[in-house]
Image 1 (cartoon, rainbow, N blue to C red):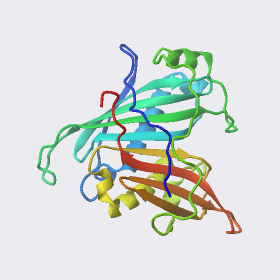
Image 2 (spheres, rainbow, N blue to C red):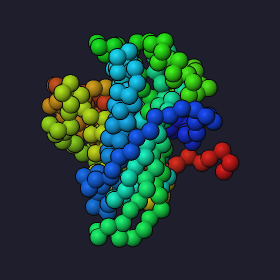
Image 3 (cartoon, one colour):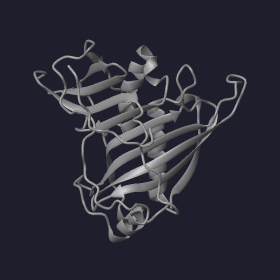
Image 4 (cartoon, one colour):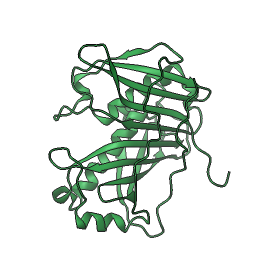
Amino acid sequence: MTTTPAPQRPLADPPDGAQFFEARYRVRTGDVDQDMRVRLDSVARYLQDIANDNIEATDLVSTDPFWIVRRTIVDVIRPFSWPATVTAQRWCGALSTRWTNMRVRLTAEHETNLFNPESRPDGLIETEAFWILVNDQGIPTRLSDDTFAMLTAMTTEHRLRWKAMNLEKAPAAGSEPDREHVLRATDYDPFKHLNNAAYLAVVEDEVLAHPELIDGPHRMIVEYLRPIEPGARLTIRRLREDDRLTLWLLLHDPDGDHTRVAATISLGPLPPSPTE
């Protein structure tokens, strides 16, 4: 079987003079794998942290406090490793009246220590997330006038529409046998919401067996389709096609006879730039 993902594009730079929110974070040993590489789930946590810090530093905390993520794109151009300090810059790349594409540029200033004494070039990871504003009942709602005005000043794209980049429908069988993914109590927040970063632990399990997928610059796309509640049974369907891996997170119905796709994840090389 051959899949045909949606056409992909490089992530755009901000317009000249556009405002952005900036924060700095330390890379900790809990963020890295056995080779001291900062994992994809750790990158997702940095994105959550700067989103929360950004909301708390603005009037959004009172006017537009509730957001859900529909998709996250992570372009690892130069990987991060420990020890390092990460600088995150966040701005709006596109928006409509109910949702936005929020761009975050992550740069890592690497350091050396006793455990990692070799110097490394600074790291660069570009990201984009499709955020939907919801009310306290979880229903999509319009951005407040002040928020819309603030975000509009950061981008020239004001008619953002949703278009899936991963294929939602799972194949009848993958290139490898399905495997079960066991969810932990620590994967959930107080609202019984599976942490967005927890989805990417699935990818890290695959990278252990296929490290060549991240040998060079690479793009990971996760699209969240359905809630995964505590106690859910999750199966991972995997399809490897040359240098690309696609994962479907299959959620079993209580009777166990049917599955629904809860999320899709793709991992492969970066798309070429317009000049290539």
